[in-house]
Each structure stands twice: as C-alpha cells, then as structure tokens.
Length: 327
Ligand SMILES: Cc1cc2nc3c(=O)[nH]c(=O)nc-3n(C[C@H](O)[C@H](O)[C@H](O)COP(=O)(O)O)c2cc1C
Figure 1 (cartoon, rainbow, N blue to C red):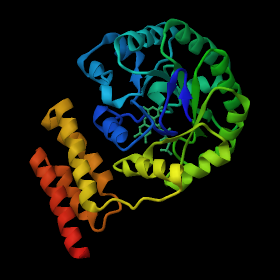
Figure 2 (figure 1 turned 45 degrees about the vertical axis):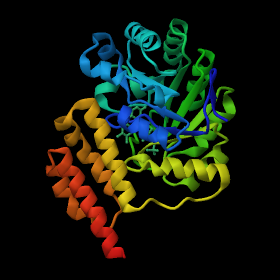
Figure 3 (figure 1 turned 180 degrees about the vertical axis):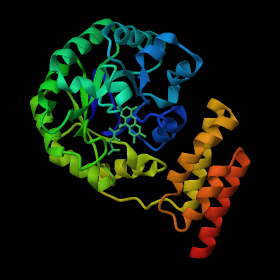
C-alpha cells in the first residue's frame, strides 16, 4: 500500500505531474479511472506569490480529485517557503511536492528544478525549511542526477528524508538525458534500499506489465506514469487492474476513446472557456487518436477546429467510420 504521511492511497498507481496536462480536467478523469494519487502540474513559487488569475486556477483542487499532490518549483528559499505556505493554508491539496527534476534551462538557470541534484546540502536546507513551515506532508520529485558523472540519487533522497520529507519520486534519468535513453531502474532500486520513506518509481512505464516489472525490480512503494497516460487514461485503469489481479483488461474501442476525449474537452471548456479549451484540446485529441487506424488523416482537421461541436463531430465521425470499416 502507498502511504504518504497520514494519507493512504487506494492503490499504488500515481499520475505523474505534467505541465500543460495535469489540470483538474485531466486529473479528474485519471481519478475516475481509479488512480491512487494524482499530481498537479508544477506551479512556480513566484507565480503563486504574485497570485494572478491563471495561477489561482492552477491551485484549484476539486474535492473529487483527492488525494492530490500539488507541485511547486523554485530556487529561492524565501519564496519557496512562502509559496508552500499558500498551498498549505489556501488550497485543497493533500500533499506539497517540490520539483527537483525539471531540466529546462529557464528553470535550472533560476537555481530551481534539476539544479538541486548537484547539491544534497541545498536539498536538505530547502526541504527542511518547507517542512517546518507547513502542516501538509512534503514530498520531492527528482531525477537520478545531473549527468552520468554526477549521480547523487542516494545522497539526495537521504537528504530529503533527513529534512523530514514524507516520500520521494524518482525519475530514472539524469538532467542531461532530458527524455532520451532509458530510465535507469537499478538506481531507483538503490534509492529504495537506502531510505525508509516511501519511494515512487518513474520512467518508461508504457504498459501495465512494465508497471508490474518496475515494482518488482525496484521494490518501490508506488509506480508513477506520465507519457503513457497522455490521451490514454485506460493505461492507468488497466495497470491498476493488472497489479490487483494479473488480468489485462481489453483496450478501449475507438468510440470509447473519443467519448472520453470529448468529456475531457467539456471539462476544459468549463475551466477555460471554449476558445482556449478547444485550442488546448488539439494536442490532447492527437494523443487520444494515437494508434488508431488512419487517424493521421484527422490531424489537420483537428488542428483547425475552433469550436467544441466541430471538434466533437470530427472525433465521433472518425470513430464511427472506423468501426464501420472494421465491421
Ligand atoms: C508534457 C510533460 C510535462 C511534464 N511536466 C512535469 C512537471 O510539471 N513536473 C515534473 O516534476 N515533471 C514533469 N514531467 C516529467 C514527468 O512527470 C515524468 O517524470 C516523465 O515524463 C517520465 O515518466 P514517463 O516515462 O512515465 O513519461 C513532464 C513530462 C511531460 C511529458
């Protein structure tokens, strides 16, 4: 069972935090597909303190999404602590997660995200300061190291534990790797063996069988799924079932996929309004369509859709035609 601080998840499957993806619309779908813990996309500490409308939206947590982990990112101790206090006191999140893995130059240059991977002392100081200032459990999501010559995963996870962190998620790649190469599950296993707090393994879990393999090979307490869930919340549901009873539930039909895509769009519209939501939905639609026969021909249409009804019509007509062809 995955337990973080006082919070017990109903299973060991975790939706990874993903910027531009893990907003309430998608998180709620992931939750409805059974996910034990959903993570929100990262929010910068400075944005939280400026408190503009868009950021306040990013801090919104629907009761039905709980338990939920809300991730903050920052490089400066004062602003990180103050932002953590806002999340602690003013949001419905259950867990405060600190980003220690974001590899993009804009973030690393501000001494934030993956930059910390080079300095276990900084990790200890920053995590201690946040833990002391809040009452919600604090966790950290990290990569295994900066590059092949600087893999401090064990020291870094131990620093999180000493600082009072309640769990650590480990993406088995270095900062320099970005998303290339393979995630190193062996280092994740070494981290699990070197701390007593829960460890959540992450990286390259693309099938339910991968999730089972990762849990077995690393001994981790939870398995975090990112890219494989894009346009595919069934991956989460099928993984939960597979881990529970070893049965692989069938893949969804094209029609089921398109119906969930439309539900996703309607929830985005409720959050952002039709114009913004439909534009944002284009990338999700491409993910929902991925792997379906002849879906490439729909790409241009979907990318030009500007209204909800147009988008819904393209998706449903495609599913219907596909099912007729197969029949
Ligand atoms: C579109 C996208 C956005 C991401 N945004 C975040 C983020 O906001 N915070 C974070 O810690 N990791 C972020 N990640 C990394 C994922 O959480 C995860 O660590 C990574 O994708 C590896 O897991 P996977 O192999 O299951 O995809 C992002 C990844 C993707 C693909």
